[in-house]
Length: 111
Length: 114
Figure 1 (tube, rainbow over the protein chains, first blue to last red):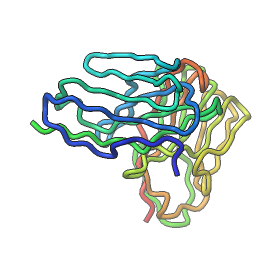
Figure 2: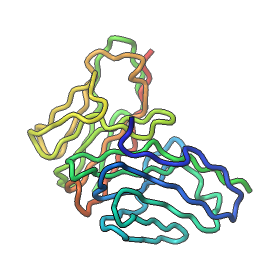
Figure 3: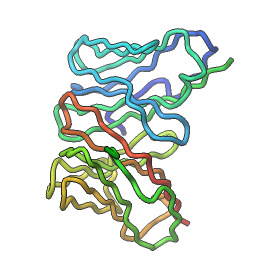
Figure 4: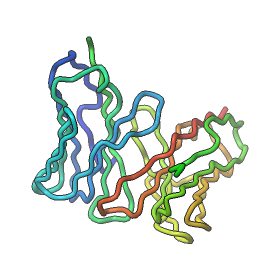
């Protein structure tokens, strides 16, 4: 089993709609990262969250790390075709010297 | 800076063959790691290194060897390739782990084992 669980595993939304992707761990998260991957390509860094309660935004994407630092959410407002891809959360769990990732969320935007 | 580079981009092997996937970074990063990506599995950590001469196992280390003789290079060796190792492999680096450091990823190596 993976130490980070993402939900949903896949998501199809109509263009213009809002959506949320979750990343959950049973342990304390240190340095929670969000990446995006276009199909068949490399990873693009989106955001990093460190502190409980922290929230960051970039354009129409907002990420939050909950107070207990065991869950993060990625919210996209007014989705566009350019948002399509695979979203991955990664984290250092309980301060361990390794970075692990969730299984990814495949996002499809229908026109 | 070239960032994180990986070679080759594509590789086809026969079962039992050996090969080395190369990874290099020119950012003087201490932390380097290897991941494999399979459909529906996200990224799974194979091996990682917190500095030259120091390596450790990740989630799926079996069938792979690594070494870190320099800060810049972190090669991944497949001693006897198996079809189960067909995957896309990513190398990543950062100043360290667990702090405010972005992980930089290479473009990936797509490996097929027949």
